[in-house]
Image 1 (spheres, rainbow, N blue to C red):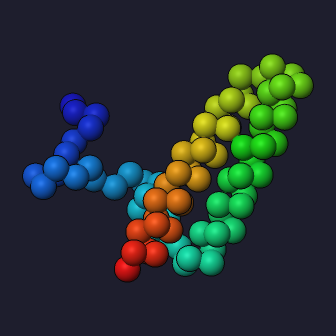
Image 2: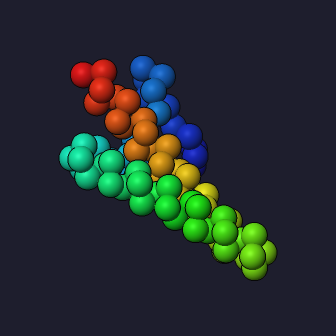
Length: 79
């Protein structure tokens, strides 16, 4: 099984997160981006206080979501 499967044109197939984000309105995406930023900051504070590894995992998820949202917003701005 291949983890990274490229399409014949060289592009990567969409992830579940990218598919979900593509179906959300731009105004809602901005709200999601703000929420992702909040989660990243909150979990960073938790990690600094408690040295909790779960907080790092949650930060990573928030950062992945924020990156996917940013890419989608950039794609929409070009259209």
